[in-house]
Length: 202
Image 1 (cartoon, rainbow, N blue to C red):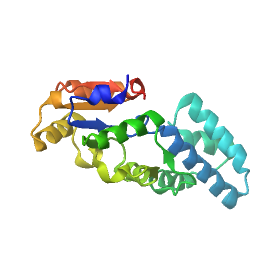
Image 2 (cartoon, one colour):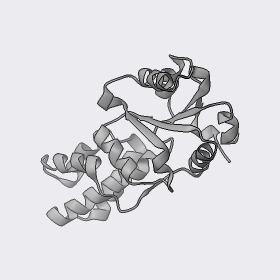
Image 3 (cartoon, helix red, strand yellow):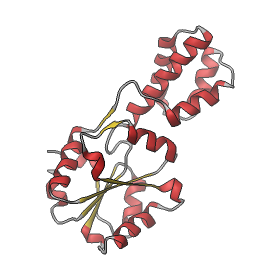
Image 4 (tube, rainbow, N blue to C red):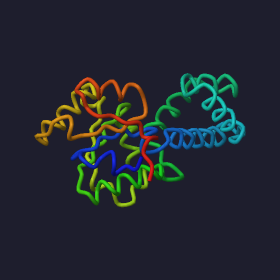
């Protein structure tokens, strides 16, 4: 369904970041690329081989213990864990993160229709902010209000409720766009309408 149909009777739309506005892997794979380049520079080990291993491992098993698996495979010192973790927080990406086309279209529609746009994101606040700073927003950034759930130390449902209260709105006036069961559950706790980002197309 077209995005405007979902939001036609809403005044606020709330988004998560990862796998909603852009693919989470687009950030992580660039972090892995930078780490592989760093190891090649410091240890003279082939960066492409390291990156290929990390990409395959990530795509097969996710990011859990990826450093440990890579360190074992390429005989890296445990001290490199610090560099790996630091890159996740403050990496300067070679390429900007690009919004999903359907999300870019939807956000642009919301701005034209003067709807308020919020991002409520979980995860390390420093890392999430780094992603936001390196996303190609196409001029939309000035219309975004962002809340970092981990920084506020609040459940998403409470942040959603605070947003409604601050705008003197009820749940029926807002829409949450997410990509996982957690976002859906948090929305349902306060009866907020919820849709999966993939349902929106233009």
